[in-house]
Length: 637
Image (cartoon, rainbow, N blue to C red; front, side):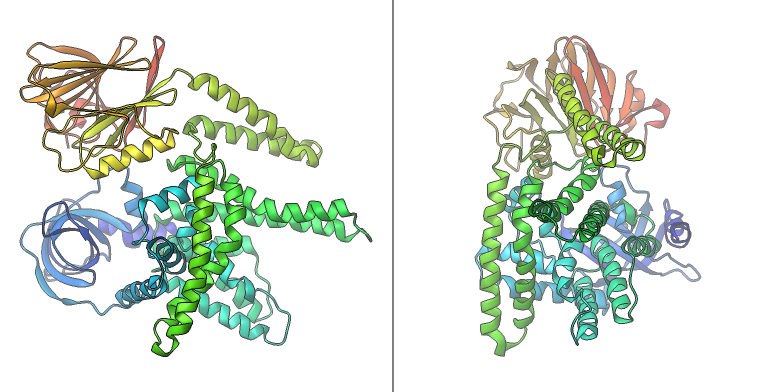
């Protein structure tokens, strides 16, 4: 199915790269652009304005487009290009965006789309407004996100608390929400079981449409439809088979849908819950053979029913979180145990408030359901804030090493399961994991990690050692968000120093204990800052500036502007953007995008479109990760 989808959808879209065409296009999504009266849009190609030319039904990303709204149609001349292989590459492919483009002439507005897609989008906005109408901002934002999938009202504080507590999945309508809401229909007892099955099918279709048929909801929705259709026709449905069918259908719709991180997390969590359910069934079958199970056995079964699904879901999603660069919470089991009993009622009350809000005569009911859901949402926010403040809420796990430990533990469990007593299978993983954690602590101690983040034109560097951080910053608000996200993943609340290289900043730098502004320096003025084993030297130059990070003789340069020092400066690494630095002699250039001037350098070019990590053990070794060395003749875009 994936090969068929690729041949029908993706390959024809890729073939348009490098061409210019006049097309009729529809705005699928629009966000405010960086310049006034502009937007960043995704366009759906509808038809070619050239006779005899057929276009694939694909999405195209346009970074600069006149201000517009979703559902509007334009006749426009586009120059198509391949997507940049940056950190958003596979995410764009998962969303069905296969090309990027620039418009050549002013687009001509031709009308509004009557597609059912935008009817659903407008309905979702009104539904979310009904849910949050009578509630304070925080409670209304959480309840509308859980009931409708509209996250536009969520604040940064709420997002941070739910992420650190490991329950951010509650703020995105997913398979969990479908399971919580449809759980009341999953029985064949009583006279109205067929009616309940039919109602469950309608509810699943409603929630799938309400969220715009997102991949995670689509996966769970297809599985739920198979389950309830089977119940309606007196047929049982196998959960793993349902998941497989859902994956095949989603892959046919979009061959790169499996690259969507939410889809991967949803699938991994569902697989963990299914395996936990099978284990619980085996335990219950064993106890069913006992005429009078002891109190201890009943307590073990109750504890297992409560813990196993949550623990298995956390274990199965952990590798996906590490591979996706997401932060890992050490209190996710506790927070889920506290939050899940509230989540189902929040979704139900929120959906009832949203539906009743459309009928003027049901205003009292809408207000009542909204207030009940708001009280539960307030409790959820308190649980998230409490768990986010616990010591192990954020675990700074090294990605590669943690994945190796997880893989080794899984192999040990499998070997003991096959060869030894099955009761001791999970105990075999415990010593290995503990040994891995201790060894990781020993290896991480004293190691300096330099992270190259930010945009391709304005990359910045964050250096972390033993819980302390120094940030050499430039760029705008998106770079500041990257700083916060990266430091949180390393378990650092606030950097010790932020060196702001901007001379005409339009936004505030990241929050830090101390901030050094390059614009406050006089020309040729220099200052040195120590953070652990990192010695940072900041120099203001006539046409820019330069920061040198010295870690026991291993030197990294971060230039801004031309950075003309007059005499050559020799360093091991240089993190460069779009402007060629003068008189900088680096053994290796770390770049996030290719520019013409790089071919003129004698340095090795380390191409890292998704960012890079430099791991330095002072006085011993330095390793680059995240990219690859590019030949100079191939480094130019």
